[in-house]
Image (cartoon, rainbow, N blue to C red):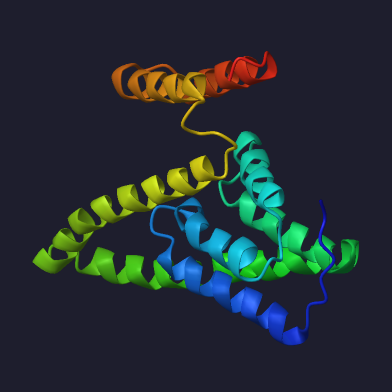
Length: 192
């Protein structure tokens, strides 16, 4: 199902501003902000379908390249829904600029300051305190992606594969690409 949207200039600005604000919250990567992207794009504004949202993440995460590619696909889908390929390119530009610019500037200036003051107790405490926040945001992302699945409670092979992958990643030195390939093969065979 595709949507037909009529986005005004204010809507495009709101899209940019939302992704710019998420950029500053994306501790641990843009993927940690997907619950709020879902709320904004799918639940609140209906600029994307549920299927477009989850497909954007799945496609971008399975392809080589930066983790943030799913943001470009979300912008692409919003633009396509707004009127075609020209709008799709504008959507990619707006969402990528929004998600990249603020965090890049903050990272540059904070890294310079943190490096100059790396021995300060507050700097060391900040670094240690951010780890639980990142883990919590990743768990929230997993929850949103699981909730979008048709029947998460009864899909035990998928849960078993997830648990096995976590154990293998934490206990062995097997490269993650082998696990991604195995998951893709199991999915292609219809086992998960």
